[in-house]
Image (cartoon, rainbow, N blue to C red):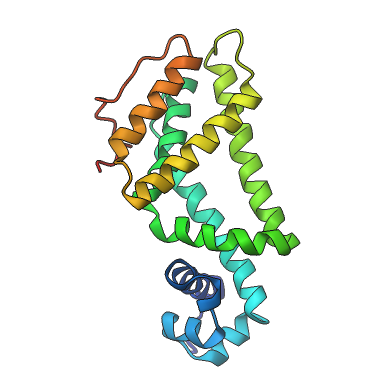
Length: 207
């Protein structure tokens, strides 16, 4: 009996190899030959699944988005109530600097491509807009201070979390210090929130 091949899984393995190259060497380091070597397959197999480098990179961007969304879903699985869920979402983004270094670095590499490639730009925008809507909805449900605009504040919180993730990645600060900054800002906009820098939450990654 012929061996059954999971084509979707094979495509994802190759896309993951491209992501690792993006994270390590930038977009310039991604060629069909190098991806084949990284994935441990032939160039012909890569070309069988992808029409060219641009097609491969678009597929890799899809895999990248899915990996980050999975990290956030896992982080909020045991959260209770909108305020705790909001905090877990923000910390999950911060902790990408420890838990998802390859996707984070690859995402930065893709940013320059997104400026010129409408498909990748749309993917970036869709992912960012989705997270923004989720944060805004959680913030509104958590009971913010009267002068807080959930939509505007969600942009600020998302920007803060992304910046802190980069800081954690570069070793400028640890996850605990970054979490304390998140808690400070949440305490400012949510009257019922308290600083929880000593919270031994299972979502916290020490660093």
